[in-house]
Image 1 (cartoon, helix red, strand yellow):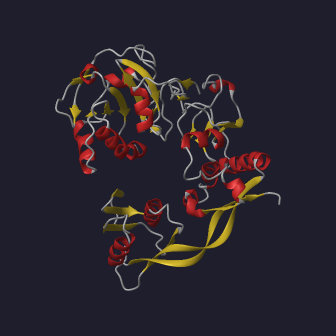
Image 2 (cartoon, rainbow, N blue to C red):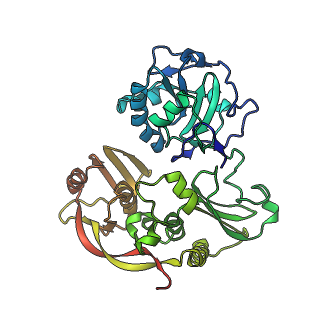
Image 3 (cartoon, helix red, strand yellow):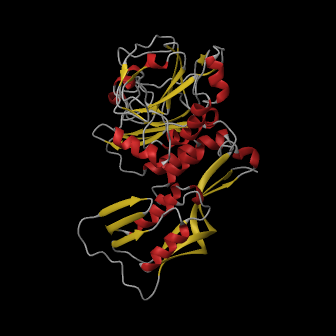
Length: 425
């Protein structure tokens, strides 16, 4: 990654689009044209120009309502804007509608102005991931970077024209995740019959998993993932619940854990550059075997060599949140019809769906708890279930599920877990 003389950000990010760079895109050091920015909310005027913020440092923050890392930055940005308002203008930028953006900003009481329904700025500053930050000083782009380093110190340094040597965000605009990784410039369908490869973290690529099968190949990949995430992908086809951290046991000394679990006070981007990997598997189109067993073997072979560790499925007795059927209540057996799944913070609806849909919903909701979610209902046929409760409130959820004849209780159960441990002691 190149180093910049001003500022950049190192942070989490999400996928935006695979659009290619525009011919009129702007880079660091370029003068930005004084374009009109339309559909601005949370600002006295619906239309602004960059020149309206003369004598201020301008930060364009590309975001979306679905981008959790973006939203995590807003409280900090709000505080910085209020403290440095006479010298700073943070302008959020989203391609989403004013109605959608306003609903979210109002919900969390964020007061930052935002350009909405944007096309123009995204073409000037093409990117594949958000948050995406563009720093503008005196009409010139001085940095394009991540959100993690947006703070009072770096902002004041930029305002004072001081030189700071940090990372520049450089998205790889030509990467196509539907093609094999790193082959013939990310193409090469006709030249590959089989390969599996593991690489270090690749700067500029977003983190994602891909699987597809067509007439030319079977392709599975995991881009810029940590060791635990790779093993989750390798084993989750045996049981989707194995993809959750509370079904993973890391039986390693602390000196090795740092290579698998990011310390709370560490920089995400820097840690991933050191401990992130890419895995890519391509097989002939007529391959009918188990891809996951190949991935498990590949990962164990590699990590036994690199870290002296491997992973396998074992039975362990753990404290679990067990979903059970309460005697005496009406059965939840489905009445048939179209399958329906609806869910938000305060309610969810399952219609003509297997009980596992409920288990996966709750497992995802409570993924940060150390207690796995276990199904002990005995329902083998589809169910109908409507729950009106704040799904983030476990007690409220327990009370609401009880109305439908389901209980959630903490019990010791023997479950399958992914155990990661040393191969030699």
